[in-house]
Image (cartoon, rainbow, N blue to C red; front, side):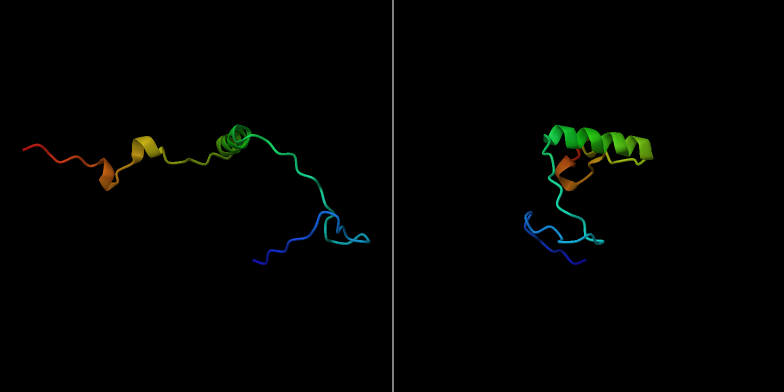
Length: 65
């Protein structure tokens, strides 16, 4: 992957396959999460329930004897 940065004022001087600058509208994190969850539910993707499915060592209690 190659990443390039360019100033917003440096639009291409003629039409080409390179897009011109388009200002992005900032939204709250809650909106990003809402849209992501909506997309995930439409696509049928399942995500882990970290609270319920966590079986790491930090969750293991010593067994009573």
